[in-house]
Picture 1: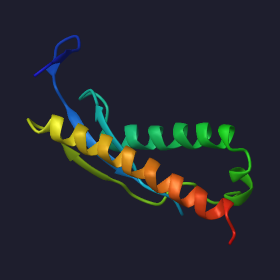
Picture 2: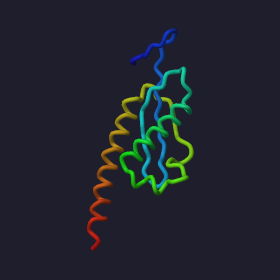
Picture 3: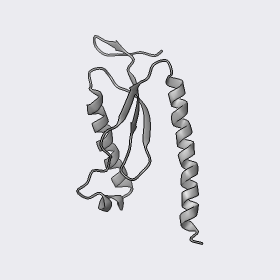
Length: 113
């Protein structure tokens, strides 16, 4: 187990985080949060920064969410203990599964017949 250090603390706080944009697929992360920050403040920060990045990259989305929030309310979080590698493998498998689904959806859209 790897530990991190602050001025008077040695810590290893890892979390499995899942949050969902409205009308889209879920986002899954395995993150490490120092004990001096609350989990809810970090999740709010991540949702805010991620929404800004998505709107900058896909400017057309900004019109769809004008005056509305980009993210669905709430999130799922659990602590990660010794099963960290299992969770990381799950996240990798979700990513490859979503890529395959996206390819299928793109083929469906591009071929109207």
